[in-house]
Image (cartoon, rainbow, N blue to C red; front, side, top):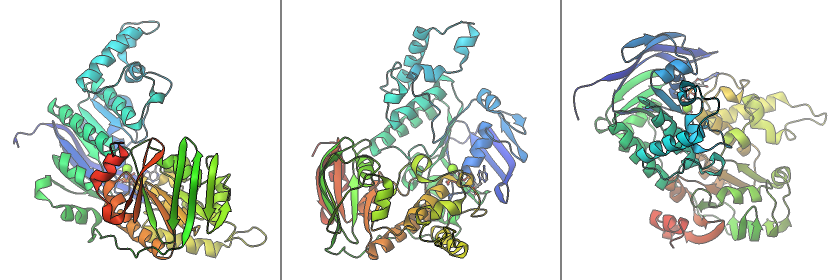
Length: 501
Ligand SMILES: Nc1ncnc2c1ncn2[C@@H]1O[C@H](COP(=O)(O)OP(=O)(O)OP(=O)(O)O)[C@@H](O)[C@H]1O
Ligand SMILES: [Mg+2]
């Protein structure tokens, strides 16, 4: 590694408080030219908050930020952009009904400089084409965003940064929605951007990838800067230990073999694009669903949960044929679904954390007069807050005030509090930190032990192979493979998922 360092950005003594929480507490970090600098830490450590200060989305209470030698007390989105910062948040900022080229040059000088009254589509398309070429990605500048996959949309976000010749590219959990192959492509692209002199600030909870792509790692904990190291100088165990400030065991997933009692049985189900889906799920069993993005895993979950219509075939629950025409009906019969997108389907962000957790069980904790038994509600909320280690100021705070990972925990707690017979988990640990992940695995094992039947959808291959008792692999909305525990291997699942096997 070369020794001479060129600083592109230093944050110094940044503080930020939200109500009772010190989200950032005198944080100082140096970012060098041409490095991938990972920010790591548990859910709620302050990573995203720091990013928001740098991108100008929020204003610090105190401290300074020095861009290329120039000091600022606060940024605005415009200032930050002109200092060369491009930020890719987890929720993309793209216009679905516009083309790739239009999105890349949205609000750009290309228009204002030449004082054009309407933009020259040809020029945009050509310029966008050059940018995409430079990135070596196979996307057409005239393609509409609404027709794209998540991975492609992310590439367009990166293209926006490349088009602006960004000096600092910030990525907040970029690989969370990506498959293995797409992640590889992203890493190659990051490598090329870095070579061209870009500084990448990278946030992720996935240890493997941090060790693969980070030149330096900075640990944050409880809003504080803890340390900066290079990957070769800190082991994975140490890093996790610094993040959590306690010993976190990466647990071997032990779970007793399921019983013979079939809880849920699907017979030739079709609907929501899926065809001919048959499987049975036993008490205490964890059935994993493998497949690439768009293979039909979430579509299947939504069918079973009554969010989409089953057009033909039969669904049996505990030996009785059932119909699920709505999520309400599904919940009533004991089927719960923890969706992958907590923002859209999971939590109601503008309501208190406590209300979110007890939402599916309001009837059970209310008296005949419809009034909630407060003590009972408080006890349940507290029990789940502790079990999931949800980091919060008060349970009365809105879910929107929580960090990403903690929002995910609220969604999990909510459905688990409803005490279901069948629990469908769609990407349950997406965005969840390493420590909490182990805790969630422990909880899943406990639920299975108690006889809950679980369907697990996960793009995290280790998670899928570790936790499932049996696997079904989907490809193009059909079941293309079934694997028993002894036959599990990553290669087999990938081959089936991509339609090779
Ligand atoms: N707008 C807000 N109002 C109140 N509290 C907030 C707000 N934004 C952040 N916080 C709190 O500040 C702390 C830091 O949150 P932040 O989102 O920076 O965490 P993070 O490290 O990005 O976590 P994650 O890995 O879960 O995304 C959290 O405790 C969070 O609840
Ligand atoms: Mg975050």
